[in-house]
Image 1 (cartoon, rainbow, N blue to C red):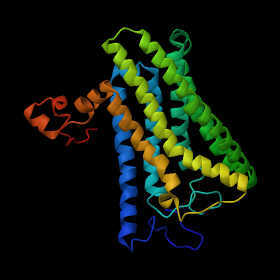
Image 2 (image 1 turned 90 degrees about the horizontal axis):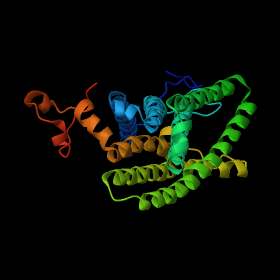
Image 3 (image 1 turned 90 degrees about the vertical axis):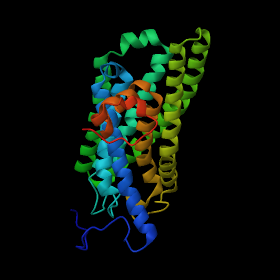
Image 4 (image 1 turned 30 degrees about the vertical axis):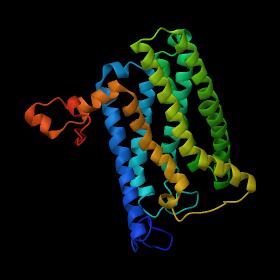
Length: 308
């Protein structure tokens, strides 16, 4: 456990002296648990389903789930405890916790670019983006992320701040280009292509897939743009703008963690193959074990337990 400079033991996100503070504490614990539960569930479901593993987009989803599981685990510390994860904070995590969020961010950006390439130029995509190349892209941004962690921990504080500022600036450019520009273009390209196809179940499946991509992108922007815009404004203003007591009470830093819950939920809702694997092989009702009931027939009833 980290000890502050004054020698006091690290406490909870806020002192548990009021009803509001207790609610915030419970919310942080619940959020961390939900992130871990949903992302571990989706990760296992993809690994267990060969047809899903054969699709490049689910390789990015595996990467997102892995980084989000680490985000959920680390949020038990960064969100539940009284922590300020900044450069000179005695309770900092040496840039490791923000890196897990950054990996999720890069995975979603890469997945969006991958889907745009697949829809706009399907023939060239099938030739260029082999399984090995997709895995190489994923490995590339994982190595890059932890390379930045190493640099930030080895250089002086001033250099670390400049590296972080430059990285944030580049990230914002990619966010605008990929998440806004490419998705608008993707929508019109996909709509044009689908309108040319004859009505069929495959056509409706493609349409649902495109809508899912766009909804994920919109949720991503809602969760991430506030903190990016805040950082840009503060950098230009040359000030910190505002400070919260810790990570767990800062709404701009809570939003990206909420997105780590929304993303797997959206994929579960939008992909029937993933949902079926979850219900039949990962989430198993206890009553089905006793009575031999098909879990898929109970999808609307809920009340599933997690099977590891």
